[in-house]
Length: 252
Image (cartoon, rainbow, N blue to C red; front, side, top):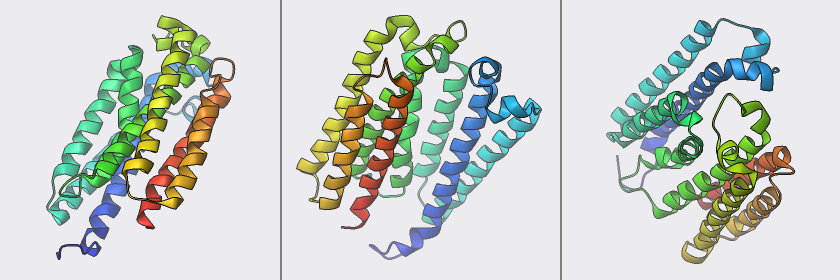
């Protein structure tokens, strides 16, 4: 493998992408399994509730996906001779299991856990490098913070359905304090995006895309209490543009 030649890493990186997909998909199935009784009341149109399939079937699918993710990451680590991706995967799976079994019903710890898991995807891909670039760490922070805003917005939207089932931050501390935390978290993410413009390499494509993302973030946090369902989708759209901004650095 010659230094600076990215081609030997193509297959390992492709395997990491497959692993990330399998891990997230298996985690989503596990999440629906834990929430199936609550979803009968709050989200009756979700497939697991609507189809009424055996829970054991979904559990087997989730385990199979996680097993495939472990195998793909192991092969990737062997081919690249770097074991950091395997470590990141194990940490991610532990965080996912801790979220489902403990932190999900503990309010803010659950929101923080799932937000870190969103941002860690950047770390997962970059763990193939000898040293994780500062730019990747910045995007990890930005993704985690904006997802925290979205998670809290979702909790406001589901506040009535969660009552009696979960202890979310809005249920414990109220929607006003939740809105303040949403604002602080999103503003911190926007600050990081601006810092990348100031301290990072000049990238006009990034600047254009991140302006759109930041505008969506501002709109999304403007009034999360009265428009929480709409707000969470606006924040999600902003996250998509942020991801596009990240990929724009591959073009310059």
